[in-house]
Length: 161
Ligand SMILES: [Zn+2]
Image 1 (cartoon, rainbow, N blue to C red):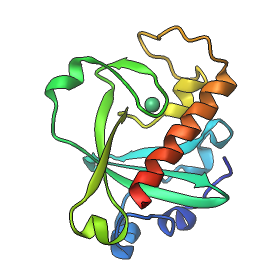
Image 2: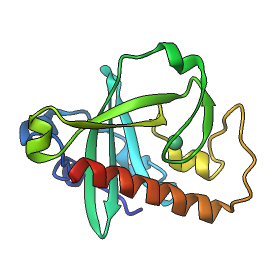
Image 3: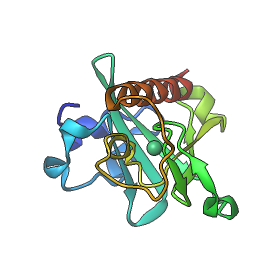
């Protein structure tokens, strides 16, 4: 994806208030991120570990989504599969919940998905970050990238619906 600036990211949030988007944690090392290997930029807030964020481009538009980890920890030790990149981890997948955009979100509606806890799906798909166990799949990297993009687009569509 193309390099995003902090300002582009902050103004792209679809499911939090302008004030929240101004204050939330955006990584300071944006220039050093491996953008050419990213389908989306995902990050956690080091000061608030239950908060995560992702930013991507959909139909030529930058979209950013604020996420929260659900408190459930018991199942995290189990082997689980990321719903975006379909990587299997033991203890490395979190249930992340996104408030829905607009009125639905204000009424408390949210959508959840099991996603790699470090939000580094793009790197797992490309074999640039390793996991302990990897399901054998006959897909090429290119096919896995397309699947991740499609899963991400579907997730964002549920948030903004
Ligand atoms: Zn993933």
